Length: 175
Ligand code: IMP
Ligand code: MG
View 1 (cartoon, rainbow, N blue to C red):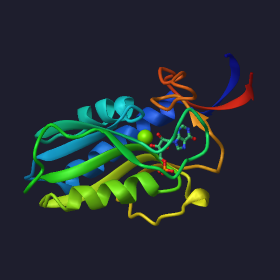
View 2 (view 1 turned 60 degrees about the vertical axis):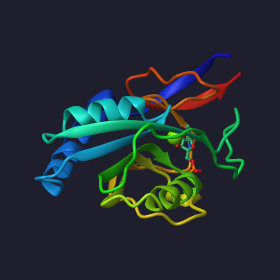
View 3 (view 1 turned 45 degrees about the horizontal axis):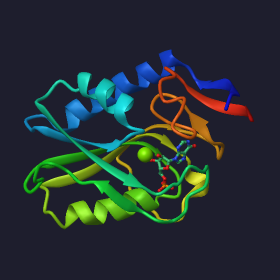
C-alpha cells in the first residue's frame, strides 16, 4: 500500500499547539499531580510531547480501546483491549486522545473511568472533527478543529501505517 500525503497541520504548528496546551494545563492543575492516560496507539506521540510541556508532577498510564477495524469508518463497537495498570481513584485524570470523531470511544471511556472515582476527569484531544459527532462529549482541551476528512500522521494511522509522520496529513490517494 502506498498513498500520497498532503500536509494539513505542519510539524511546527503541531509543536506550537502542544506547548500552548501544556502551558494551559500547567496553569489549570497547579498544586496537583496530573495523571495522564494515553489512549493507545494513536495518542502516543501527542502524550509524550505534551507531558514534556507540563511543568508539574505527571504520572502516566496507558489504555487501549478499539472502535475501528482496519477501516476508515467507525464500527460503533468500543472494546477494551488493554486496561489501565493503576487505580485512578482520587487522582486528577486527564485522558489524552489523538482525535475525537463520532465521540463514541470517549463517551464510553469517560463513563467507565468515572465509575472508578477519580478526583477529576478531563479530556485533552489534539484533533476534533465535530461534524461527525454521534455521542456528545465534553473536551476540556482541543488542539485543532478540522473538517471531516480522514487524517494520518503524528500518531494517527491508516491500516497501522503513517503514525511516524511528524505532521498531520491527509491521504490524497489510496491504492
Ligand atoms: P470515535 O469513537 O469515532 O470518536 O473515534 C475515535 C478514534 O478513531 C480515534 O481515537 C482514532 O483512533 C480513530 N480515528 C477517528 N478519525 C480518524 C482519522 O481521521 N484518522 C485516523 N484515525 C481516526
Ligand atoms: Mg485513538
